[in-house]
Every structure is written in C-alpha cells, then in structure tokens.
Image 1 (cartoon, rainbow, N blue to C red):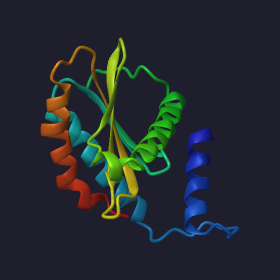
Image 2: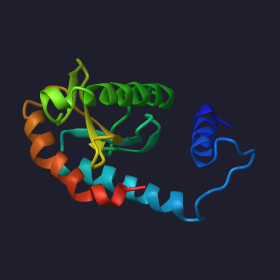
Image 3: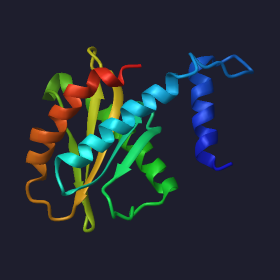
Image 4: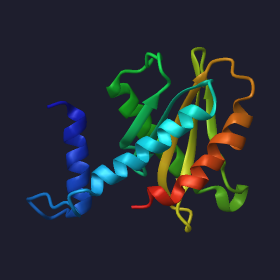
Length: 166
C-alpha cells in the first residue's frame, strides 16, 4: 500500500472519531458522492481555457481530493511531490486568510515558474474559514492568466461551491 492511502485513511479516521479504534464512515455513498463533485469541478475547470494544464482540489489540510489533467499532459511533479505541494499550498492559503480583515478578501495567489504558472484559490465558508483549496497549473507564458482565473475559473467555483459542502 502506498503512503497516500494510509495518510488519507488516517486523516479520515482522525476526523470521524479521534478516540476510536475502528473506522466508522458517515454512510456508504458519502465519499463516492463527494469524489464525484470534486472530479466534476476539476474537469469543468480544465475545460474553461486551453491553457489550463491541471486543476486539483484539496481539503483545508491540503489532502488532495481530486486532480484532473488536460488531455496529453504529462505532470511535471510525481504524486508524492504533488501531495507535498498541496499541503504547503493549503498552509499558505490558511496563513493568507488571517490578513483579510486588514487587506481585503484574497482572490488567488500565483507563482510563475519557467515551466508553468501555478495558482491557488481559497474556497472559504461563510465565516471565512478555509474549506478547500483549488490548485491550478497553466502553461508557462500564459499572458492572460489573471483574466482566466478571475473571469472564468473563480465564477465557476462560486457556481459549484454548494456541491462541495461537507
């Protein structure tokens, strides 16, 4: 068994009942239904612009819930590296949310690498608590990345946000 399923099992087990020795799931279809919503959102994000290489969603702890890649794309990071990146991305978004009271609501954060552009978009609840992080990668040199994110991706996330509620 690889490390990722063990980490995910531990995370689920801890969240469901931290003192229990056995895992009790909410109901049989809970994770299947949620996974479907995560998958659908990621696939819809990929379709909004041809320069989007991949779209992923993590929970507030940075655990990857789903990733979709544009057809024909070979990921630049291994699955282990993607998991590490997701955890650090969620941590950074959590930290940024602390400053919203003073600086205003954050739309997204981006990093420009030689091989791609990475963007993280926080998804918060009504109390500004981090619920999910959307992680995008776009082709390097995408000049209109801001418009893609603000005019296409963020409106789609807002439209589908109720599907993601736990």
